[in-house]
Image (cartoon, rainbow, N blue to C red; front, side):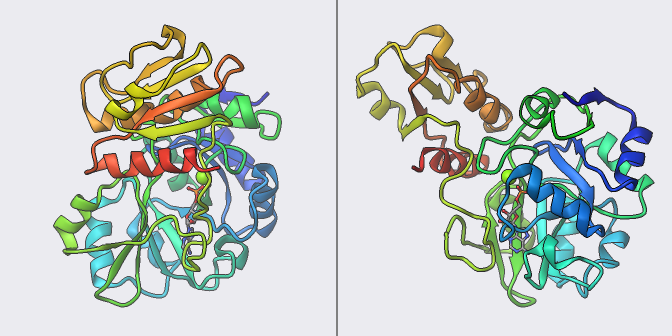
Length: 319
Ligand code: AMP
Ligand code: MG
């Protein structure tokens, strides 16, 4: 098992030696390595069993350091960066040569973000290289939102987990790209809502989870899989489904009748989408146990973070 702690210097020296450290971010925990070190990057793919056609996000601490990694920043991208960084927004930008092709799976854009997590920001500032950090879970499984989640699945492969507590957002970052100066596209819905983005740069197109989208080769239909049959529906639709002792439920604000208490998760008793997002991945993990065969999952309201929550549930439900 990995050591869990808050020692930034320890994390720094492990990373400088070319090894991996799990780091907290506001979205999910990342499996971090030196973005400039091919070997470190390759070991991330290996530990996660992630296919090499699935590019990584580069994390850094300031707009100035972003400028060292990319050829240019379109005006609208800069507006988004200034408004939402540090935060759960990833921007695709034309990469400079310093970024190894392995990081971007050969694409000429690199995904970049400045995370909003104090320990990780401090760590990034102390390093003289940026970090690639995909979610710290085996490829295809539910993303980790606590140090314990990481330790359970990848503890054998990593030395140290920097512990920032539970992730405050709980969903991956929103990914936005620019075909030209003017046109923005969301390639993955996530922690920064479409509405918020549109309030800064006007209408954006959403082009998520296509399996054949060359811009985002990682966006496979089946992902976030808890290893159970997941049935997605409205509360009313789920009420009508026949339940057994192996049925579990994840609902938005009130419990479904006919399901045992140990199989029942209500994501947001307060009715807030932000709370539901925080709890979603740990709920999927909690219900990944032998006594559960089927998970009935209520679709969240179709706006704001609800769109990203529904995207993850849809993928968890995909065969
Ligand atoms: P993860 O770090 O596990 O949240 O996954 C990062 C995701 O970002 C990948 O699965 C891709 O879908 C996306 N991504 C990363 N780099 C690029 C890029 N250059 N172009 C398009 N999508 C990217
Ligand atoms: Mg991931």
